[in-house]
Length: 285
Image (cartoon, rainbow, N blue to C red; front, side, top):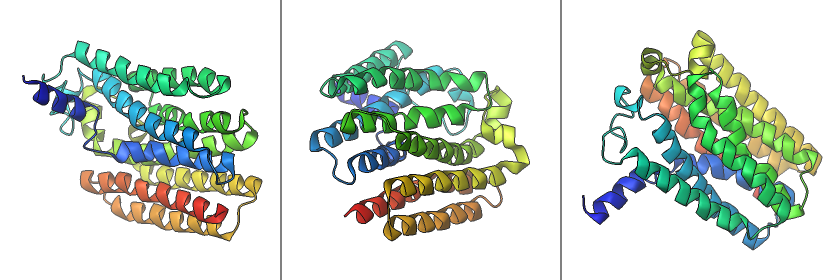
């Protein structure tokens, strides 16, 4: 395989052609930074976290495919992934994962001591998440912690502290992650049942849509509390009302629990996260 072809496979392994995961990690990171900085984040901190989002999401995809290398060939949506298709060897994936994590850590080293210490927990969450689906039906909760760990890190980097507000925003992200990743897991539910992979989509069963609605409601409740603590105004709360509309639209997309509709509902969460961030930016502005 030529160098350009190999690099293309690495890019596919990192899912750079599907940036939805980057956005789902980016929005809560930016929520945290904007709350922590009262709408005026330090430029260096903002740059480090945006680059870190891209690196760590890419690393998460690599370690996920490494962990699922025995399952992916048997799942319709994942059988063409580079490791499953034999185009990237597992050892190569581990080297790429390490390189991405080390690059992200080098960026974190430019921040304060508390942020550096918190980054170790974040790295553990990112590396261990893909293996949980073998043992529990609740990996989506763990994903919420892994994706949300950037929030206390953002507060630490911006303020040198992790106040209660950081954990309120963190709780919002855990609820949101359960909502959108359950919709994502509904796409693979039949295949997951066949190969023995666990998820909240399987756990919730026929109550899947109701539980997604419940966790979207929990997300909005925690975000409303965060806005109250931070003293946000009407523009921020208007964005939460708009997010309710996106959550309702997702329920329509999932009405028959089909693969395509569930996947489109998952993708729509990019708009959910973006509108909350837009409201936060406008409110502080």
